[in-house]
Length: 221
Image (cartoon, rainbow, N blue to C red; front, side, top):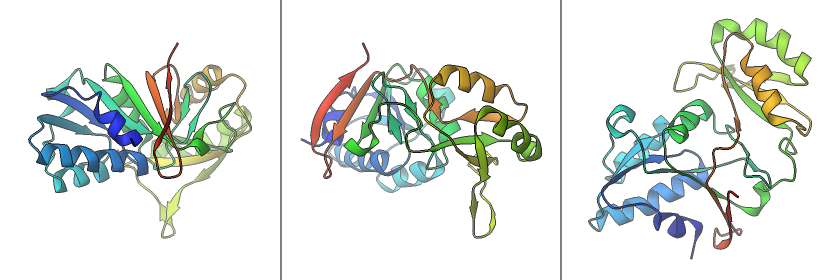
């Protein structure tokens, strides 16, 4: 059984669910699309425009967040998962919408490979932070004071815009000893929209091998 097949077992018929973004989430959306083609009744609220496009291509009915609250669950991926099931997300640049959709859900199920499991958040050395474009000079000044060295994410030589029309700063960081404290301090900078820290939000993590076959399930204690 793959982690995607296992995640499908938690999707109630007739429900509305959050569809995350990124590699693992896209694979789940494809598995869900096969189920929908077989007659399964479900609606999706995508956490990114890329996920919305994929879901439409697969025939998964989409609804707005307003129409669907509360969502039965959200299935998404992550870039880091610590032993307490706290996360760093956002390498795919959809962190704020992913956090909104996750917060609107009764349950958050995360799908990862073993390389995403860490002992301390920040081991991979990067924390994405989404900011209002006007705040870029201020954020560049303030974030280093918190141990975050910001680099503006660009594509084709131009600042990348998120689905929300914002910039993303990829902050070089050391392992984070107090994630909640860092989250509060970053969010206190005017112009910061959100960070890639997802703390205390996850119900379950499904860990797969290189081919995403299920290795283990971790539940929030």
